[in-house]
Amino acid sequence: MKSTKLIAICFLFSVAFLGPLGAIDFQVPAATDIAGFGTILATQGSSNAKELQKTKPGFVPRSDIALKTEYPEIKAPSSGTVIYSQRESPVASVFSFPLGGTVAILHPESYISLVSGLALDTVIFNQAGKGQENSVKKGISMGQAIGSGIYPERYFGLRLIDIKNSLWINPLFLASWLQDRTAPVIQNVWLTNENMRGNTPIELKTTAPKGKYIECQQATYEVSVAAIDSIIPGSRSFSAPYKIVIMLDGKTSIDTSFIAATCKSEGLSFLGNPAPSSKAILENGAYRVGRIPLQRGQHEIEVQVSDYAGNQSILKASLMVN
Picture 1 (cartoon, rainbow, N blue to C red):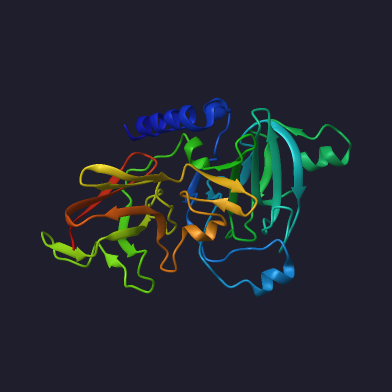
Picture 2: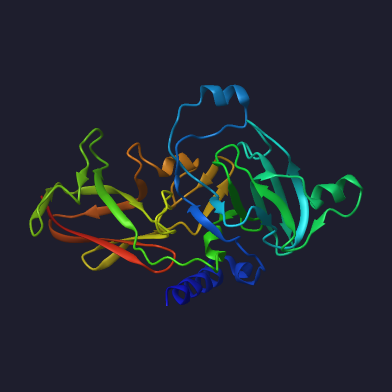
């Protein structure tokens, strides 16, 4: 039933947003561990080595999925033409972040897949060295996952880029083998009064006892949500949730998701936040998901967090706005 929901979500997603995505013959390799698209990374890379040394650690959502392989050998997720490759890049690359051994493949449907963290002693590069056509077929060996850059040992990274729409796509939508029966965890939800800088945010999960009203002032509030999802049972890795919806008095006020990240000259934009991607994350690790206006009176707020298989967690709170 969960897999049926996942297929339905993928279908609606492809029709409403990206058109031909559902038609691409793309297979996310099976894995025993996943850190998903949107998961918070501890540091942010730079395209310049000197700038990288000055960069302070910060929170950024990852634009890939990091997978621990079920089998040592990684196979090409789809057929296409190799347009870029590197055997090693300890700091900077044309993609502005370290990727280790990497292959970028252009697919006929105008998508680019980027597979990184590889040991690249494969037929792909042997053919290129002999002047043969540098193309790959789905299922061909791309080497072993050895981990490098942001990847631990035996992990590799997978990114998917929609060239026509300037989007970095969440590859989890194409993981047909994915089975997730665990609902995401809502760690906390905060409301921050945008008119009062430095004001302590209201914590919906811990501020008021159950059945009591949380008092606050009339204003427009920024909503931030800390939530994680465990995809592989028993894993220490977590993924960002797929979808976050904020209901106010029974009506949808915010509806956002990790379907894709918009690519702009300033960088990637997650959850409708301005680029660069770090602006989607607060210092406490919560995601900025949008703003809601609160008028005087009593209000009911409901936070719905869903994962890729349709599992959902809900947090409710009652507000008294003065």
